Length: 286
Image (cartoon, rainbow, N blue to C red):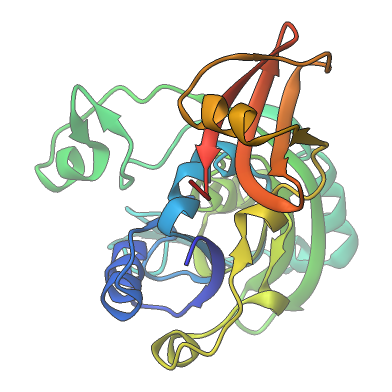
């Protein structure tokens, strides 16, 4: 069983919890392409068996989230699970549709973002949240991110909440984004709910739940399918296959890039061409 399945992760599970559960059920090596906070739900792609070798091709995907932003309250973790640090009255003009949409325009684009102190980013070999729990301060370095789009979904004036959909680059912290949006609106705020609905091409509609995983009620996305948009190279004979499998570099007059490798109609794996030379990368069928 080699490839990828898409899990709809429920709340209160860590990504590591899901990986461990999948390992026990499938009796295979399992990895994921990017963590999702325990309080968050949604798309969590799991790599199974030799599919784990594909992680380097899948970690830089853009993502789409549905987000609920609570205005008027600030927490130390920037989300609903944190300690309340401050409460403010929310001017109702902030919750007017046009005001919000105009504010969104100023958030879209390439920018620097400070990650939250309660995150798993490592500084000097130690995770930021460990420093935070010890009450230690750390100089945070901003990261390059991009917000591609923001779509307003709902305004709840009674609860001082707005809901929006964001498409963003890898490395974007939605908790930090929520606090930044609240600030631009003229108040404070935190992320009160998060649902990841898409990672790259993997969307929530194709995701299975935990019960499906436990019952093995799913279809795996094969490695061949993952690379279906790549061109193919067909090895001419068994000798070429043996050389390829043994890591011998082969001459092919092809442009630089990633290729699906076949012998006849049998999918062998993935190879890379550089300067007319083909070398093996991922082997699925020995």
